Length: 317
Image 1 (tube, rainbow, N blue to C red):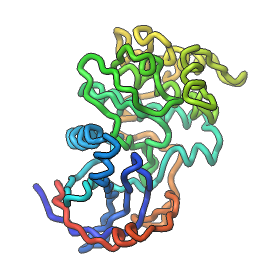
Image 2 (image 1 turned 90 degrees about the horizontal axis):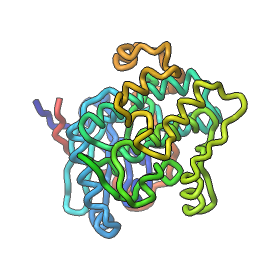
Image 3 (image 1 turned 180 degrees about the vertical axis):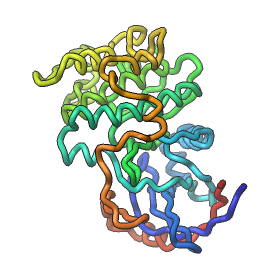
């Protein structure tokens, strides 16, 4: 069943989406109760930056997904100058912001988010989709504190191997940079980086230049804090295996090897997927359309016009 919704664009949520887009808060003009995230991408800039395949791949992939820990896409449209994609509004903001405020997460907090990420990646991989851009900035909190994986600009259907160099440097698996091809196992490497960053506040491989970062990654040397327990170290080491054929999640047992690791000893996975576990962080929200968990932007002239724009979308309900 479809229903036409009249939208009013309210304000900018994100600038510089892929260097050619913006994300806005939009509201149902009739009821004024329902809020959405509206992603606007300039077609000319998409063409100029040679991102056509990424943009249309993102749209196609998102349209095929239904999962509690993945952002929901409602519909898309084009007006000749811009492409618009309408998403659910995730009001809690980026996990990255909470991590930077707290500096590092307690292990119980990191484990909670890790569980939800695992199930999202498991679902994507079951559809032969590699996410390829896992990082705290792409994980957002719902109003009740659960995670949603967002920004599928680098997601790709991989049946066997691919060799595109893309992603965030500090999170890139070594096989992505060596040019010999890679598969969905790159997501489990990035997952290991995510665990490390959540627990320590910084990714394990850093440098002043891309070359320095890639060189650090290729060494495979991980410096663990003395306070980190042996189970956590073992878990991260197994995820950050330079050889993808030896990497946890890419072995014979697949994702089950991750789920049965000692780090998740007390986890009931049915409770995770059914969201029965109380989230460690509940976003502070005054209303359904609260944007306090997002940065404020001074709208430029074209953005001011966009904020006044009224649009219609066919919403699938």
